[in-house]
Length: 285
Ligand code: PRT
Ligand code: ZN
Image (cartoon, rainbow, N blue to C red):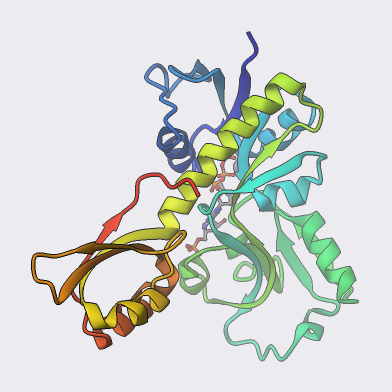
């Protein structure tokens, strides 16, 4: 019987969320989170735990069928894999930063300067697209200290909260790339493996959908139902149930997380009461 192999980061920023995503997809790994290779209990999937930098190449050459890694790594290594699905975690950006006292006006400030980075390919492309000639100084870690020790005028590194830059007296001046964790796949999977991948992607999509949506229940005066239904479109349309009080009914629907507070405000203005908001575990549309 065919099974898929998936490469996940062994220990680092993507590890926990990658395993959690599999768990939310109903795939459990009871045996061996600290091993290098372990089968899933209830899905034809074998998990390899690797350094994130190795994952794209292993997937490209078929050592693993699929993998989870940051877009920044895919972009830097420029390997040939299919990016199947964005996963919504590990969000960060690759940015250029300069010492905070510098009077940075625009990108031309970088002309002729020395920039330290571990992302030399992405940076090279970015600079050439912007017609900037700068010296790229490749270092393998602690990029943020390069300006203070006189190694470079600027850096190009991953930023998420910005606190590392702040602590090192740097300010972010250009965003080179936005990144999040993605599911990647080998380009030549056989049809059985493709089927298993499709099934996994279907599960991932329903997990993602459920996180972006909330189930909402509320009581509404009957004469406001049509107004409220316009605010709450639901998946097809809202469910309307009678209440013991003939003047009132209960409305159930699904709302998107990003417009949630706006909608609540509108519902209250329409006379909605007893609003309950409940997380959704899985959502298949
Ligand atoms: O050992 P291995 O090689 O597997 O791991 P690693 O140390 O190379 O990678 P790791 O675990 O640090 O990051 C894995 C992936 O997480 C990256 O490739 C990104 O896609 C993503 N990611 C998300 C981040 C960050 N956020 C992040 N903040 N990767 C690194 N950082 C570092 C950044 O390099 C800088 O030193 O965090 C610092 C900045 O963070 P803030 O919050 O201070 O701005
Ligand atoms: Zn790494």
